[in-house]
Amino acid sequence: MPRSAPPLVIGHRGDPVSFRENTVAAVESAILSGADAVEVDVQLAADGTLVAVHDDTFERLWDDPRPVASMTAVQIARLGHGDVRVPRLADLLELSTAAGIPLVLDQKHPIAAMAAARLVTRMGATRTAFCGSTQGLLAIREADPDATVYLNDASLHPPDVRLLATLRPQLYNPLWTLLSPSTVHAMRTFGIGVCCWTPNDDADLELVLALGVDAVMTDRPGRLRELVEARWPAPSREPVAPVGSAAGALGRAADPA
Image (cartoon, rainbow, N blue to C red; front, side, top):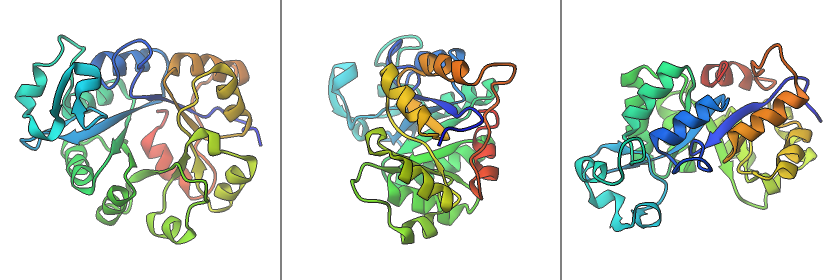
């Protein structure tokens, strides 16, 4: 069912169409193009520093086959140049906090998840949200009952209601091709908002908007912003939190995000 208010526009790894994913340049571009929040991937370097990178190695984007976990932050900082290099998570949190646009941290392991949560707390980035590894999200939820979490899902089967009850996600976040009106309705019944990843073509973006999702992660945040504003014209681009118990915590994560 279509929403009466605009969904959140979330830049997936920043604005990776314009700049290399997860870099300062990509995050800045997503913010400037109208993103309400920016999703970035986080992993631990060999010295325990949290860095923003998706793959287990640097080969795909940085022509370096070494694993992320085998390199120190100093070594990683030598890859690339200027704003097009692998940033520390602390740098991105500082940038996003200054801009008033929260990050959604995609973690892949409970150890990295808890390290990221501790860093977020130390830096006072209280509007930060978390997605990714279910085990990592469970660890975050146990440590912080008020944390904002997005439950990722790429399964053909609906999420286990026991997991929903334990994790208490503010947003259910499936692969966009798995979305259906019944999924959106079911999550609303549980008081859970619906996000999705990662539609990019105009037709696909229009489709998920028509389904009434509460948020969309896309590689084209600028284009999604245009489509959202065409459906929900100005004066206000402030997103409205999803219904039910998710509302307060999502507002904490992305108000306006």
